[in-house]
Image 1: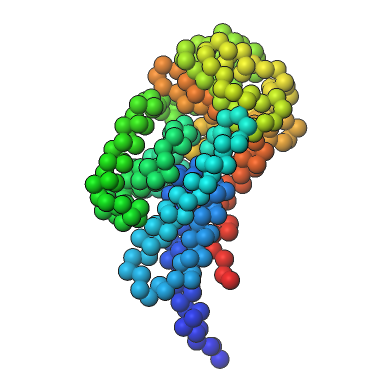
Image 2 (image 1 turned 45 degrees about the vertical axis):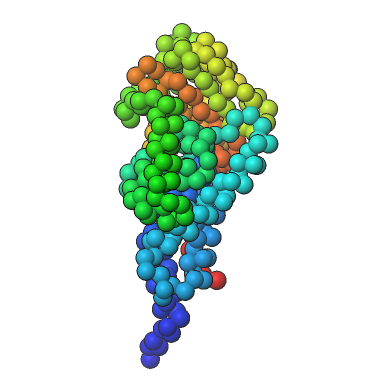
Length: 310
């Protein structure tokens, strides 16, 4: 004889169903605010626990509740992360995510996803970052953002406007994906063969190279500035000796994961305008490389730690 599920079981099933429906959106918000897939996953897990334990019968809009909870949690984590990163050795870069399966990481559009923009977003306060992300990446209305952030409508409009202005001053017009991939191919080939002249031709005069290794040996602890210096650094023989570069899709743009003896040793991507490559980003940190390689499975709804029944 079939046994009818208890109201408690049915209610929890409904809670899981609703959360799974919106999970990618929640991860997308948290990741853009934090620049870390690992921290974003923790935030999403905490949002699930709060959703599981709340009185859902009084929640008018589940997506509004979940978005608000996730955003506020992400802001809190971002505030503490800012303090932790003050002790980081060398440049800190956002943790890349594999977007080959889901180019938008749950967003309605891929705004505020590329690594170079996430890096610039770090210069905003966590609240400014959240307001910009909610508006530009997820198209939330200003009244909704005001309610989520518990700020006045006028204040939210000013915050988003200031963020846009700041980012427009920092950002350059990007090349399209096809041109980015072409530049990447030429760049890697020139770097492997030690062709400094070809590399210099690809770089802008004010090119900068940033290496994230948190104090690892052989990893530059300060930004390398200028076309000539960056080109010489890129041709470092030890980096490319017996190396196997593999094309990957990171944050909606082509990048390269460099393997040696079957093991990933560095991830690299860049930002480029019609003038050339202006910002190189190298990820030497083993934990960030591991997070990137494990990230694709995470975008499948509920496939990682996103929904756990206690």
